[in-house]
Length: 401
Image 1: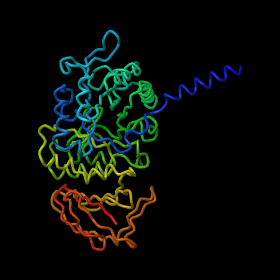
Image 2 (image 1 turned 90 degrees about the vertical axis):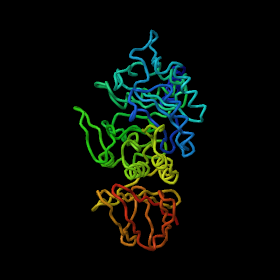
Image 3 (image 1 turned 135 degrees about the vertical axis):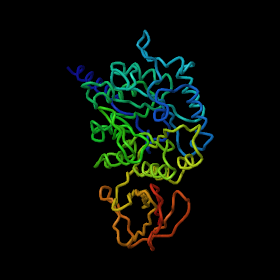
Image 4 (image 1 turned 180 degrees about the horizontal axis):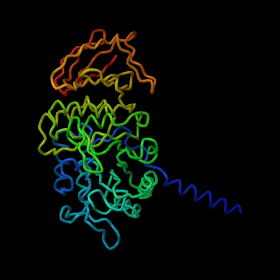
């Protein structure tokens, strides 16, 4: 009897060893690039190499971006005779490990796409029933990030399905950031903290300011519908666990002003900063926005507290975000179709975050105001904040004592 109890304890401890995600990853929101928004399934080895080169050439690696993630369409339509996933030999003639090795040679990290169902969203083999086999293969190839989708899942339970892949990745032994992509349908912010490192909170993004584009049974969403879609999810986010508002559309048809607002809001919300544009043809202004270290620093703040909406009265959206060392970030977005002027009296507004018990103490402290897009100091909180903001543009400031 005693021996049976000891054996049971040993088995329990052994099983629990695998029942966790990799700790110490994604302590701040992951930063990188994903192929889907621009290329869909039209991807190949040379594209990955070109993007990796651009990370270095354009200063994006230096700004903090590190993951290059291949989305759906990288594999053949069928598994091989051993049941393994096979990289498409025309797209990736040297295999996936060679691609990962090239990315790693640049000091970057490599990610792939999988799906919890029987088929991916584009109709390629899903991972269902092959989780442990596929996780082992990912480890052999050198995968550092897995975007795990939710197509062809039937009546599967989301929490259980993502837990299975989490355990499979952990058993394979290579640390992998697990990106849960079930579009927020199963409210992952309520259960995914111990399973994945980030989870999508909405359906797919599309490159429009404020729209919904229907696709029959599902829709794509513009920037502001995505921002407004969920409530009461701020408390779920923090180091190692992030609300994911989807890959960015910065540089994909927006005005420069809209690009700045989009990037500012994703940074404020502590969403992962995953670029979705073609870096090989990106304009200088787009790269300037994406590589803005002062804006990125707000996203990467060690507290990991998402912003909250302070007001959306009139033509302005105003959001505030507590930062470490009693600092704050604020964005003021002009939602109108023409320039608007703001005159913000600090003494008339009580700015705080009750959820995290933080207050902007204007009465007893004077904060310096830093304009994060123009990289200059613009006064302090002893005087009103006055600015004219162009249509769909943003004033993003950091408040320091």
